Structures are given as C-alpha cells and as structure tokens.
Length: 579
Image (cartoon, rainbow, N blue to C red; front, side, top):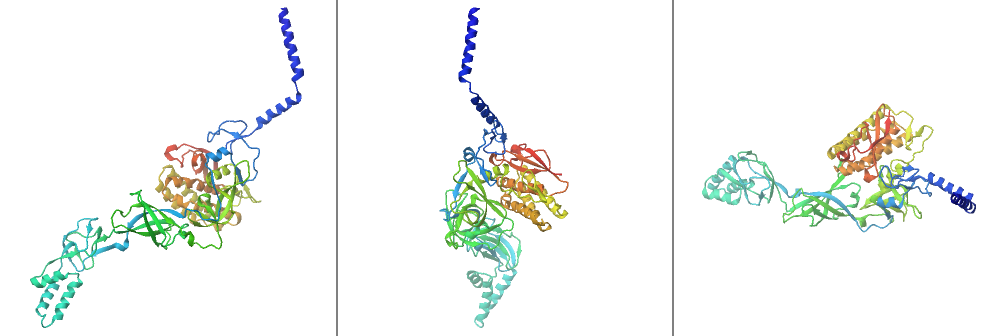
C-alpha cells in the first residue's frame, strides 16, 4: 500500500513539473486559431470550380479529389484561374498571335469523283425507223467508235435508196441528181461503203446498221428492240471515262483563299496509299443555300480507268496566301482558337507572369480565313498567347463559375430589367404575342431536334435543325426595341453560328453543337415570357468529355440527348423554367 502511494505522488509531481515548464498560453491560442482556419478552408474541384465544400473529399460530378481553394483568387469576371492539374487534364494548348503566315498553307476538303460532262454524249439515230436489233445489251458496257450498235428498218431510207438508183440511171445526162441523192444519205450518216454497195448491187436494203460515233461507257440505255424512233432520238448515253471531274464542297468562309489554277492533291478512299495531283479548273459562282458551300472542281486524267465515278476522295488545296493583298502584315490567329457566337467571336488569352494558370475571356473581331488561320481585325495584339485546344473546356468552367463566357456576357441590368441567379437578364416588359408565338415555335423545333438526338438519328436531327433555322428566319426582331432587341439578336446569332455542325449528318458534330444551342434557347426562355409553357433545365455531367452539358425538356424524366441509348438516364433536372 505504501508503494502505491509513493507511485501516485511521483506521477502527480511529474505532471505538475511538465505544466510549469512547457505550458504556454499564447501557443495554445495560435493552435486553436490554426485549427479554426483549417475548419473554415474551402475545398473545390479543379475541373468544376462551382463545387465548394468545407472539407476535403471527392467531386460529386467527376470524382476527382477536391483541392484547397487558392488564396490568390482573381476577382475579375473575365479571368478564369485553373490548377496545373486541371490544365494537364484538359490538354490546354496555346499558340502566339503572329503576323507571319503558318508553314501549312493548305486547306483540307472532301469530295467525290464524277463523270466529266464534256466527255458525255448521246448516240442518236439520224432518221426515223424501227429497231430490229441491238448490239449493246446493258448499262456499263463499253463502246468503241465505229462499233455496230443497232440495226434499224426505215421506210425513209428505202425511199432514199430508190431515188439514188433512179438518179444513177440518169447520171450521164444529169450527174447532179446522183450527187444530190448521195448527199441525202450522207446527211443521215450513211457511210460511203453503204452507198456504194446500194449502187453496185442495185438492190434496196430494208435494214441499215447504225455505228457508234464516239467511244465510251453506256451510262443510260434508252431503247429496246421494237421501239419506233424519230430522227434525233437517242439510243444510248455514253461517257468517256478517260477524264473525270474531282468535285469538292468548300465553305464560303474559305473560298476567298482558292483560285482557279491552284494545285489540288487528293487521295481516293479506294486507294489510300496513292496520291493524285491536279489543278482547280472551275469555281461555282453560286452558293448552295442549304449547306452554305461552294462547289469547286478539277479535271482528272484517267486513261488507265482505275478511278471510277462516285468514288469518295479526301483532298488538300493550296490556299493562295501569296496572292492575298493586305495594306500591312495582318495579325493571324489559328481557327481552333476562335469560339463563334454569331456576331461575336471569343478567344481565351493566357495571362502572363502569374503563379496560377489564368485565362482571360476576350471578345475579338476577325476577318477572312486564310488557310487554317483568321485575320484579326480587333481584340488581339502581337504576342498574345491564345488557347488553341481546350477553349471549350475553359468556357464551360467559366460559365459554371458564373464568369464571362460564350453564353453569359454579364449583361448589366437597368431599372426595368433584373438579372436572375445565373447572371441572365429577365425583361419585365411584355413582348408582343406574335413574337411570343414565334419564339415558342423555335423552342418546339429545338425540342424536336432534341428528341432526334435521343434516338441517335442524324438525318432526323438535320431535318429538325433545318426546320428550326426556318423558324429563326420568321422571328420579327423589330417588334421590340433597345436592350431586349439586342439580346434577342445575340441569341439568334448564337444559334445560327452552329448551323453547319447541326446540318452535317455527323451525330458527334451535332451533339457538340447542341450544347451551345441549348444555352441560347435557355437564355430566351429565361428572358422572355413564353406564356404558360413549362420547361425543365437538365444536365449531364459526363457530356463534353466530362465538362458537362445542359438541355431543355418538357418532361422531368431524364432522356439524355448527348448519349442516347448508351446512357439514356444519365443526368438530372436542375431547374424548372417558365410558368
């Protein structure tokens, strides 16, 4: 018992001495303060900056580890900050704005081979009659000049032969009659041998052989045995395939760089290891109103017969940069750096001399296309470093972070208009009922297109998009004035900017364009009263390579237009729009 008391006394004394020598109130206060700071630290996702939590964990959207939010946050709505990890994952690439043309001065185009119309002809009969026999049986058969192609019975020829034989009896007294009778037969393309045979045999031939006047392949057989023909009627359409046309469709934005005589190289899909070279021989003066493309073509020598009409080809045409006239050396920006939003164009410029990777939203004005670059008119300066790959990722992150982006210019509200929680203006004034109906029709066409994407049917998407763009033409923007009108025009232009992708019949291209179009439709629904219509704003976090994308629906049940049957139920309803 005595030993226990001694041990307790020694333990108590040790604790007392430790308290005397090591206890410091100030350190305790600092420790508590540090712990308080740790508990108040904000954790966010490098790819989805809208995610903010008070403790570490996983991003609920992409599953990445959350990271502490930087204390060096930039307050500018035009500058988006990203972590080094996010930049690497997004594969952000940049290029410097220059006044020198890039080495690659060619434009990639696609097309096909077609028959050369200059080498297409009809084999016709020069006199009326009935076909007794055909020596050409089917389409695709090759015909040589001088070859027998048909036998025809012709009462006109019988009469003409009788006239020749009667004139032959009077040739000593009136030789002109003989020559006139021969010329009549020659006019009908009867050969000298055939005429001489009639005179020598003194017998009238009831049937005459028709010979081919050209060499080629039968592309259209127009008659059968027993048909009655009039002079000038065609028996066959033939095409000489020793020369073909290579026909390409070029977007109107690129046509200014192409000249007649410019070199074209192409590779047929049938012969991927063979390269053919030719020159531009014709540029169509008319723009296709549906595809907004211009047809160019080139003559292709094909004496070997290896190339066939309707073969698909991938081409590359030299853009005549040396022929373009500028008052001074223009600034050039790569096409991949420019995000189109209708009347505006946007690039993201890397902010220099910062510890945190930062990218500035910049509205620019661009001019004509020069190969794979655009001429810069305003908004960029020599030496600016622009994002050429990953700009859409940056823009999506900026939008989710409620910063300036393609679909959110931070429009300032005035006394009459108030911005909602998404930075979007709601116009309090009532729009005319006619305009309300026109916008409702536009949304209906958009919904039809959305349903076609859900079904993964690109042709139906194209048809719905065509109808939507027809509805765009019917919107009477002059029915409203001021800021509402400006805003309406901008959203309409945003939708127009993605027409080529939606009309491409490529499901991947259509789905890429569907997101920005959806944002423009969302802006219209938010900003204008469309009657009693109710819509749901829905979002898939997996679309756009994990960045996420939204769409509008009339039902709350999720049907994903970005993946269709592959992930039909992926997504969630974010918000109810309208009434």
